[in-house]
Length: 409
Ligand SMILES: *Cc1c(COP(=O)(O)O)cnc(C)c1O
Image (tube, rainbow, N blue to C red; front, side, top):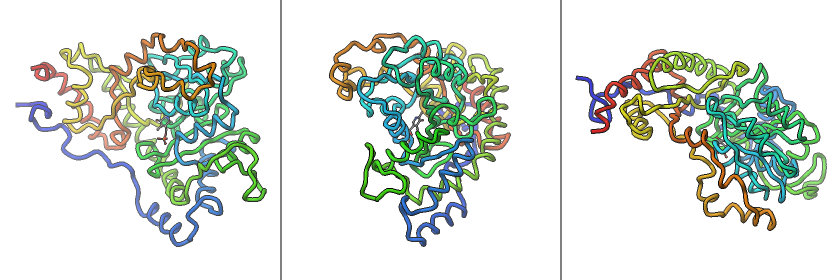
């Protein structure tokens, strides 16, 4: 008789999904090439330099500046845009902490706003309502790889003379109306941490089409140096955010794999969209018709426990994991994190700004709260499998639904 794996039954998945990260002799040779060259750091190297050019070109951007990680990419962007104490930056409540901590690192106030309940990305109406005379920038996140509404956000940014910084850490290769995300706003940032769609273990990159901004971004990432000037001359605030040659060399190879992997994810995600939508209580992330490609950092769907005998989301995810389906936890709402609850974030702000009331502390975030509660995030390696692998994911959800009552006993 069929039994849920979490209750001792046989898992639906008997063969593993593809492993992540993916690599072969290309990465191995790239690494040993750096080893033998004796040039292991960025400054005189060619690997990271060429990676920046190749990544920027792929993303239809003029410039790329590689850096230590995706959090650093946002910090560099804040510094290069001159954002600092007294300023406000609008960020989604539903994101990874880095989107928000980079603003605090700059000494500015992150103003948290709610997201769209269907695409899970920054809600432009909430953005407009949060703009004040201190607002300097907006940082949308392309959640799971699905672009935020860049048409409306660009229009809002233009109207109010704000910078648009696309946190594209989920969205390598994603497109909005045929244009690669990250290259549409003033600045785009990406991460190459191990879970991301391309990886060197850690790493990041910033892309821009603005020549002046490129000079400032590059200078901030390299101790305030300027091109062609003496090594020990430093012209603006900067730090050392340089990416090593090892990582640059690996990322050049990872970029070569991106399109083929994205094509597999796109195909499997379409199968899941159709099959999961048929299951009562499951609603996949909505795709805006202007999203012409979703890189699919995660496949995300909403789970309604009412259709699963009242089994809480956490228990459903455990049951899914036992059936062999790799998932990752949803982000919690940012406004619920300790640093906002205990007021520690105020230590980063200018004294006057630190003493003020911050409306977002008492605001309602109905959509973020629900998404943190009822979304299931399937990791991207589960989208890299065969048709059979994808079908098994659907089978696992159906199996849990059939036996949901047994999970409550
Ligand atoms: C991963 C991630 C980052 C930060 O990247 P790191 O390389 O881990 O520092 C920023 N924003 C989002 C949305 C992310 O998922």
